[in-house]
Image (cartoon, rainbow, N blue to C red; front, side, top):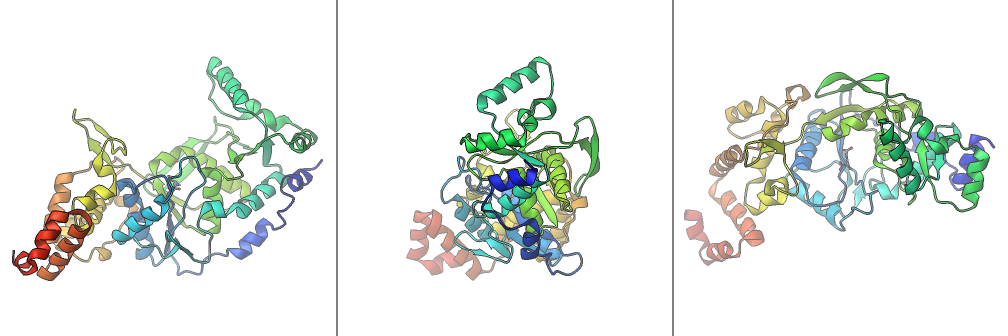
Length: 408
Ligand code: GLU
């Protein structure tokens, strides 16, 4: 049985090809140097301050280069999904003026490169997976949790790198006839990418924040298609950022370790990988004076909603986050009297590699400066809107004598 026959057996209803997708999603017609960026949240909870930081930079990079900023909802991890959180994330982004040019808008989608919700893109992923199977770069894997546990314990005993690779990748060695037989018998399976790499070899990668560096090649046969029929993050990232024609992937530095997987997937497809910028995480000093990551679990200020409830002007948080993003911004904004932020030129070179410390004192100073510059009517409207949403007793006071409130 050939690989093509196996691919047809697994995906009998997929008749379109990767070429059809290339035509359906052509390169974007944008001016030279325009960057296409995306914010790709998973609908798993509230808008994290770190996510606002990332999306603000994505938005800025697209705007200043006359490119496109879009939002894609990454909802393939159905177990972690929190109903309604996708829409809420977008609403909160809007409050901070981080508004996409296309993509997922919470209650609808807009743009020529959609669908922008991953769970609606199954056909696209399946077309690519079918192609990878047909060229011998992907295969069905029937290993159960016990098989994987057994492999792991053998690797632990032998002090080897854990994972599904090389000789441990059991299902790599099945014949296509065996695979077909087991599929016909209804055995559950996932699909794995067949890596051609070796972790003792190094590859050179380039990151817009940290420059060029070496990292071990990927050799893991990662799962690309789960038993629920949905893709994994690694695979969906490559397919989506290719066909949505992203030029610059801006994401948290926790993804650096997976970069070799992504590089190999792009290579296997013969696609040019996008530029990558991995952003440092935001840190905070704990009670003992140690630096640690801002934590969703431990820190109020990890959730953007905390600042909204506190009545902080949204521009203050955005400006403050830009001081973390670019070391020259603070001086610039002070000189510009907290105005015309859109004219500031963001640059990846001016980003510090160490995670910046969240400084609530500086944020409060920014808020004060910004509020002090508002005229009476604007300040009144801001306070009134805030009170309506968050503070009933303040609302009563304002409504009982609006003119007195304005006079104060
Ligand atoms: N859905 C991923 C996350 O929320 C996106 C990472 C990326 O930007 O590629 O972490």
